[in-house]
Every structure is written in C-alpha cells, then in structure tokens.
Image 1 (cartoon, one colour):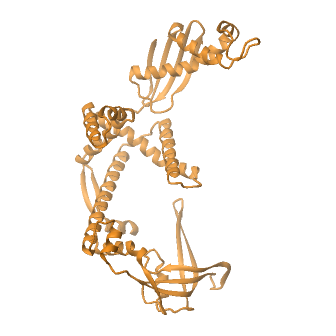
Image 2: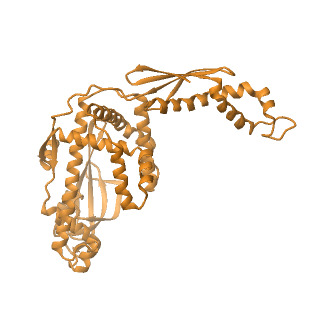
Image 3: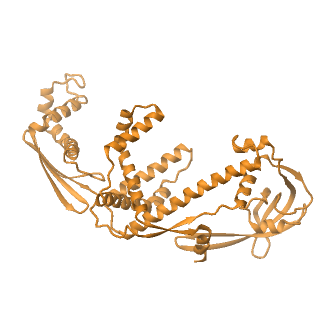
Length: 431
C-alpha cells in the first residue's frame, strides 16, 4: 500500500492511497459473499448460485460497487497507521478502480489548524462575588414551608401574608372591558415575589367584592430590538385568605431538611452552607467562562465548517436525548438548531485553541494519570481498574482531563478582579 498525505490548507488534508489488487483480494471476496446472499439465478435457490457463475455474470458490477466501501475501510486503516486526526466526515474526492489490477483513491478531511496563539496570559478577568444575605435564608425557609401553610378566611387584605382569589378582566385603553378576555377564580399568592407588585399594593386594604386595577408590562426582544407592550386588568376579589405559618416543630424541621436539622438554627446553618457552596460554584463557573471567552475573542479565526457542523449536530442530539430523558413532548428541533448555532461555532473554536494551547505549553495527560484515576475509581465502584482504563481510552476520558489541565494552567497564569455581583448586575442594567 502506497500512502501520500497532502496538506491542502491549514485546516484540510488529503490522503492518496494506491493498492494492488492482491492487497484487496480478501475484501473483494467478502463483497462477493455478501452479494451472493441476495442473488437469484434460474435453477438455483436464492443465495445458493455457484460463485464462479456469479463472478462470470456480475463480477465487474460487484467489484466496482465494493470499491468505494473498500476505499473507506482502507482510509481508516491509514488514519490509525499514520496517526491522522480527521475532525469531520471525510469526503471521497477521487477513485480509480481497475478489476484485477489496482485501487487508487483520494480522500479529503478537516484537521484542527495550527494557530499562533496570543493574549492568553496576564489577562485581568472579573470574578463576581455573591454576598449571602440573611433575608435569602429567611425566604428559603418560607419557600420550603409552603407545603405546610394553612389558610384562614379573612375580611380584608393586610399586607403580603395573604392570598386572594379574583375574577380577572382585561381592559382596553379607555378602561372598557374586552369581551372574551376574562378569567375566573384565579388564585394569587401575594407573598410570592414573582407576583406583579401593583397587584400586591393595589389589593392591600381591599375586601371581598372590592375591585382594583393594575397594569402588566411585557418586554421582549425581536432580534436586537426591545418591544414593550402594556396591558390593563381589573380584578374583583372573591375570596381573601391569610397565610398561617406552621409551628416550627422538630418534626417539621426534620421533614423539610431531609432529617439534617432538628432546630431552626441548625436548619438555617445548613441553608447557609448550601447557599455558600452554590454561590462559590456559580462564581467560579462565571469566571472560567469569562476567561475562556476572552481567550477565544483574542484569537479570532474561522474554524473548519465541517467540524462546526459536526459539533452542532452533536449538541442537537444531546438536547434531544435530554428531552427524551425528562419526557418533554413537542421538541422544536428547528428552534434547538438555531439556539445552538453560535454555541457550536464557539465550541469548535475553543476545542481547536485548547489543542494548540496544550501543544504550545507542553501540557499532556500521561498514561500513568489515567491508571491512577482508574485505580481510585476501582476502589469506589468495585469495577476492575483494567476495565475502567479501557473504558477511559475508548470514551476519550484523556481529552476531558487534558481540558481540565489546560483550564487550570490558564487560571494560574491570569489575574482575578473580584467584583460585587449585585453591583455589576445594576451596572449592566443601567447601560
């Protein structure tokens, strides 16, 4: 087998392969055996015709048909032999098959281009710090207690610790009821922060049969243009109930804490720990994403389109699998595809930059590291280290470890600027 690898561009290679007929004889014979199963010749049962007769009648057609399949198979042999790294579906660009003589073919494929990386060290990246407030703890306690609330019928709304049942009517710009635009017996929890604050304010002091008006503002984007629509409603109160909080007994506290707390102080300490861990994780994730985004932005290039397409398809398939897992009906594949377009391009860019960074900075995952990981997991799972090691290699676990190493390197070689998350959010809204 003669092999020649041509560099077509910085992100594309082409393989030329010359094979003698003798080198593909076994593949040709295999093709005859497969085709024989479906061939019917008068005087013989299906699949039982003599091979010599099949070759005489259909030999040339069978061999030409098999040549493309053989070319594809041999290409992947070349990939292993030459340690080639195609990143998208290879394309057969030329084939010349002469029965009894030779098979020649060319296949093109994309590769990750070599980049001259810049501006990936000594950057100053903002890291938001989330401050835990005592009111966050109190709100979480209230939220977890909701299933245990009871309600007393009341005459008048006195603040937020109430829920009301209303008949709702949409009004036009002149305050006239819009026919067919009403709803009856809507339950509104005034303690819920997501409830329109006009409802909370305008319902206060009202009694059963009283009415109040409020507006609802819908803001949404069409592309980059912000659209704002305002709607007016009239609510007639049909029922008022005061929320009665349960006594915080040991039984209830154990129930809402999953048997992790028996007193209110213990429960609040548990919540503080959970919030702190969550905020720390969120802060780190935002910082990491900002760091990687900045590096991708500093090293702008056009990724191979076939690679972007394969990443895009993979993201769509993952989303569809998640939808199946969570039994989500009516998945809009077109919307999913549109949503993941920019993410696919970003991911393709990052993976190429990642590989170039690893090479530039001599960051590697050694066999011994995979073995060490397999030994640790073997102790936890009871699965043999040998099986785990094979699984890691088959599932490209080394690539995941390499990405972790590169990200750790980037974090160690760039600077953090801590900012108040709440202030930063206000600043963005102000813009």
